[in-house]
Picture 1 (cartoon, one colour):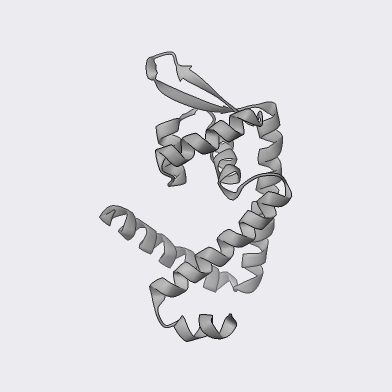
Picture 2 (picture 1 turned 60 degrees about the vertical axis):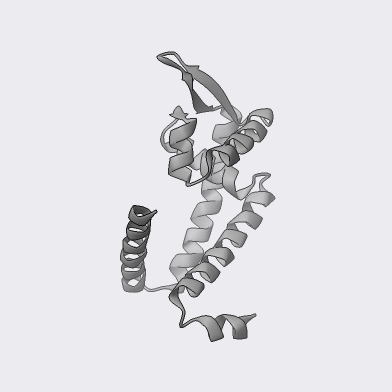
Length: 147
C-alpha cells in the first residue's frame, strides 16, 4: 500500500483523500473500541461544546446530511446518549441534548481525539503543524465557499 500512496502523492487532492481516509479509519477503530461510531463521537463532541443545538445546526456543524444525522441520532437516543426535545419557541425545531450517559461517552470520545491528535503532533514539527493547519484551513474555507 505504501508504494501506491507514494506513487500518487504528487496529486494534492488524491493525497488529501488518502490522508483523510487513513485518519478517518484510525478514529473509527478507536471509537468502536469505546462503543461508538466515528460519527457519534463527533456528534457528542459538538454537543459537549454547545448542548441543545437544533438538528439542522448540528448537521451543518458536523457536515453531515440531515437524513444521515437523523438516523445517527435515533441510534444515539436508543442507546441513551442524547435526548431530543421540541423547541418551545418553534415546534418545528428539534433540539439535541446530551444525557448523563452521553456526557460520559463524550469524555471517552474526547480522550480518543486527544490520543489521535498526539499521534499526529508526534509526526510533524511545530512549524510544520502550524503551516499545515493554515493551509488546510485555507483549502477548507475556499471549498466551503464554492460548495
